[in-house]
Structure formats: C-alpha cells, structure tokens
Length: 356
Ligand code: SF4
Image (cartoon, rainbow, N blue to C red; front, top):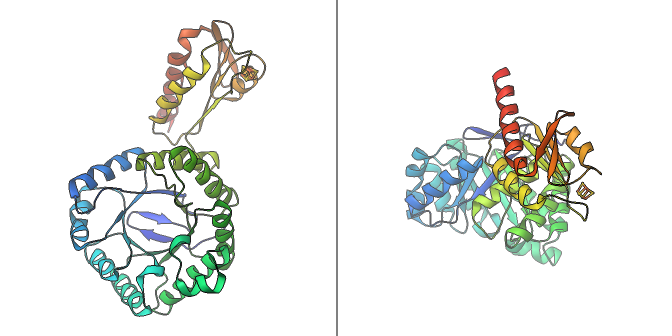
C-alpha cells in the first residue's frame, strides 16, 4: 500500500491509510438548490462519501450555505475558468475545492486560491484532465501522454507549495484507461499527496463501469489510490453503486460478497432470475460485515462454493441444498431459494450485530 499524506475534507480523511472513499458529482444546476439537495441526499443514501458539484456561476456559489446546512457528507466545489468562484466557494464554507490549472490561468490566480484556502483551512484537489491540459505542456509532449499529465499535476502542486500550501489531493484523468493507469503510477512514485482516481468520459453505465473497474481497480490492487470517482453518462447513483462494487472486488471494502455461477447446460433452476433478485436485495442491505453469499447451479462447483460461503445454495432439479458456514443444513424447494437465502443473510447479520 502506497503511503500518502492525510488530508481532511470536512468529516472525512483522504489518504494517510484511511479507507478509500467514494465520490460522485451532481448533474443538476447547482443554482437550483432544491434539485441539487435532493440529488445529494440520494447519493448519501446510496453510500457516497463525498459529493462534488459544479460552481460555475455566482448563483451556484450562493447555493453552498443552503446545501451545507441540509446535507451530511463533505461537499466539493468544482471550479473551471473563474478563480473568483473558488474564492466565493471558500468564503461560503465549502469543504474542498477542485480546480483545473489548465483553465484557471495565471499563477497569480492560483496564488489567490492558495491564500484563501490556507486562511480557511480548505483542501484543494488539483484535477488534471487529458482533455484540458495546459497548452505549454501539450506543446512539449505533443499529446496528453501519462508523462504530460503527471508533469502538469506536479507543476500545479509546486505553484501551491510556493504559497506554503500543501493541503492537496491530486488527480490525473484520461478517457484512455492505459494512459490513466500509467499516469497515476508515475505520480504515485513522485509524490506523497493522496490520489483521487478516475477514468473520465467513459461512456454509458455498462461500458463506463468496465473502463472504470479496469483503470481504478488495477491501481487499487497495487495499493495506489485514496479516493475514487466512477464517471458515467448516467444517473450519479449508478456511479456510487459501481464504485462500491469496485472497492469490494479489490478487497478495499467489506460488506456482502455475492457469488453466483454463470449457468450452463447443467443448470436446472431459474438461476439468472434468482441471482438478479438476490443481488438487488443484497445491494439494499447496508452493512460493513464481511459476508459471502453463494448461489450455485448444480453439484459440480456448487457444493464447494456454497460450503465456502457464509450462506449458500447449490441447485438441483426443482430443489436445492442449503449450506450455512460449510454445513449442509437441509434441502429446500426451488421456490424457497430466494426467500431462504435472504432470510439467512438477515439472520446472520443480526446475530453478528448482536454480538458486537
Ligand atoms: Fe454449470 Fe453447475 Fe458450474 Fe453452474 S455450478 S456453471 S450449473 S457446472
């Protein structure tokens, strides 16, 4: 695990060994405070740890106090082009500011943002994107290469450091998965600032989740990354769901791990339908208890996986065998599979919670 500096963002710590946090971004007009509030609350309920919103107008900045009063997770102002909006967001009490040095302009403007954030003790994320790299760096490298992204992030960090400001998180994003991975590996070797990971402009939910899982997941498995955002052309709630799955798959977050077989010609139960129902029901159960639930089609791999799980089922013809912690409990009818598995999960979780 890469060691990174700890940065406090409101009630959350990013880096310094803290659990990898999940971020998402609202897609409402921030000036529409009721719509933005409703979306932030939805993201909170889904398990999002920090929410970013665009602050692109003075009216958007004016919504910040209203939103801060009514939400419970740290809020981040996303600033492009107009550094004065960063100053306004800081004055409004925002928990963190994201700026893109590629479009903020002169070092003088960076200096003004650093000065304000130092005074207010607000961290800043320097968010470098392949699509908006500074002209000078682009001219030097010819295209947004991993080296170009990394150099841009480190140069922007140096501009803040010259103002005695090091309350920073860095990100280097690209729509190319290999470029994003390589850029983050380079950055991880050259700095101790916490890293925010994301593949950008990934497409719609299906493709975007795959790209994000490869990019973010590869780095997380190597111990790189302190906070993540899955960017999807979709409802931001889906970003949070995908991020939770990525963290769980990389072993960065405990919770319910659902194992189900791919089905084949041996399957004798309506397994795909049952798996979809169970996965959806399990998603709604918010728990940090590590619990493996297995739904297997037959006796080939079924009993093995079902036995390894905390609770599992191995299907047969019109019936299944229920296992609990490796122990064969009883045969159940096919129509009992879904309710029995869910009942067992709830019972096991309740037992564990009572023991705590
Ligand atoms: Fe096929 Fe059985 Fe394997 Fe499922 S567990 S894929 S039904 S062999």
